[in-house]
Every structure is written in structure tokens, then in C-alpha cells.
Amino acid sequence: MKLLDGTVHTAEIHWYEASLEAGKLYRLLPEREAEAHGYIRVIDESGEDYGYAADRFFRLPIPAALAKALRSVRADRRTNRRT
Image 1 (cartoon, rainbow, N blue to C red):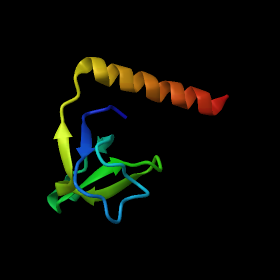
Image 2: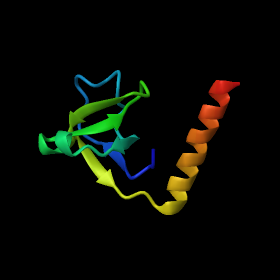
Image 3: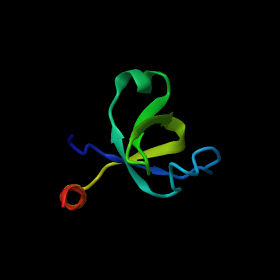
């Protein structure tokens, strides 16, 4: 899946404490239906994607060099899991 952009969580975390860390970048998965209802799909700390209220995040453009570095880290993690 192509890395499109990231989000950063800045609001206080109440019920998401186990799933999200404040101020951290998270991968966003585009989903029109969720966004039409005020939600976004985010890959959280569990490694799974879940719907979260969109107003708790800020969308940030990811510079090409950072996107490349993040893809490299993700590929390294997949390789390490297989060994």
C-alpha cells in the first residue's frame, strides 16, 4: 500500500491511550465513506487500521525524502519478522 500522508495526534487522549500516542505520526488509509462521516482510518500502535474521529488529527504532507525513509523502515520491519 502506498504511503500517502501522515497524521499527528495533538488532542488529549482519553479512550485511545492504548492505541495512539500524542504527537506521533500515524499512517492514514484513505477511505471516502469513513471521511464522509467524520472519521479517518489510521494504522495505530497495534499495527491494525481502525476508524478514529478525524478532528483529533492534523493531516501533514510528508516530504519525499521522509516518505522514502519511512518505506525503508517498514520494509526492514517486514524482513525482520520473516527471519
